[in-house]
Image (cartoon, rainbow, N blue to C red; front, side, top):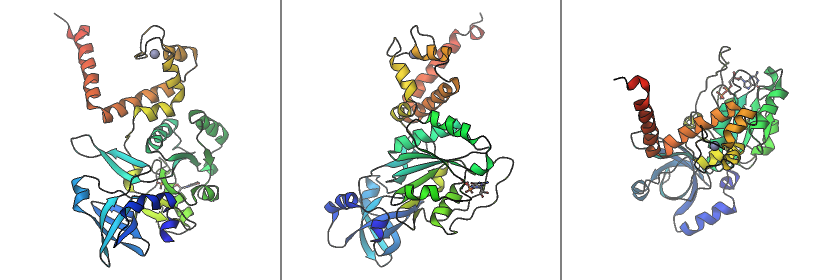
Length: 342
Ligand code: GDP
Ligand code: ZN
C-alpha cells in the first residue's frame, strides 16, 4: 500500500514483473547523493547499494527510480536493476567529457515556480519550459506571491502568451497552496524555479509540516535561503510524492532542439516558411523569421531568448557544433579589416 501511494501503479508493477523472484522486492529511491542511496520498500526505508552490474553498465539509479532490490541485511538491499524510466531530468555531468547525468526519474508533473515580484522573468520561464518538455513530465506554471503584485493580470497574460497550452496558476503560497492540492495528488512532482520563488513554502504547504524551514527573504533581490534535508523524495500526505533535490534547483540546460522547437512553436513554424531549408535567419532572402521580426509578427526578445537557448543546447549536445561555431568566428575575424592590415 505504501509504494502504491508513492506511485507504484499497475504500469510500474508491470515493469517489475520480469524481475519478480524469490528475495527480490520492488523499491523506489528516496535519496541519492555521492553514490549513497536510500530506498523505500513496502516495509520501510533502508540503505541501498548498486550491484556491480549497474556500475559496469553505468546505469546508476537516480532519485525516483523504481528498483528491483535484493535484501541482504535487515537494513541493506542490493539494487539489481533499474526499471525503465517514464521521464527523467538530466544535467550535464561534471568533468571534461560531455555526458548526461540523471538527477531525478519518473516525474509526472513539473511545477515551474516564479514569483510575481522581482523574480518575475519570462525568459527564465522559457528556459524551464524547455527543460520540462525535454523531461517528458507535464509542466504547470505557478506564479507565486500574488499578494505582492499589483498588475498581476498583465503578468499572467504575458506568461500565457509565451506558454500556449501550459496551465498557469497564480497563488500566494504563504496564504494557501490549496489550488495545487488536487493537481499534485497521486503524482510525482518536482518544483523548478529560482531561489526565493517560493518552492520551499509550497513544499511545506503541501506536506503540511515543517520539514523544510524557510527564512525571511532579503528585500533587495527576492532571494530566500533554504535548508535542505537529506531525503529527496517526500511522500505527500494524500498520495503522490515531491522530489526536491539541491541539484534540481540549479539545473543546467540539458535538452534537444526538438523540445526547444516545441516550446517556441511559433518560431519553428516561421522557420518552415523560409525560402531556404537551411536558412540561418540572418541575411538570406525570403527569410520568414526576419520578415516577422521586421513587421512586428515576432517579439525580438522572444527571438533572442530562443537563440540563446539554442546555442546552449547545441553546446551541450554537440561539441562538433561548437567547433563549427568557433570556426565561423575565426573565419569572420580573418576577413575583418582590423586583422587584415598589411
Ligand atoms: P525557494 O528558495 O524557492 O524555496 O523560496 P522560499 O519558499 O524559501 O521563499 C522565499 C521567501 O519568499 C520566503 O521568505 C517566503 O516566506 C516568501 N514567500 C513565499 N511565498 C510567498 C507568498 O506567496 N507571498 C509572500 N509575500 N512571500 C512569500
Ligand atoms: Zn530564415
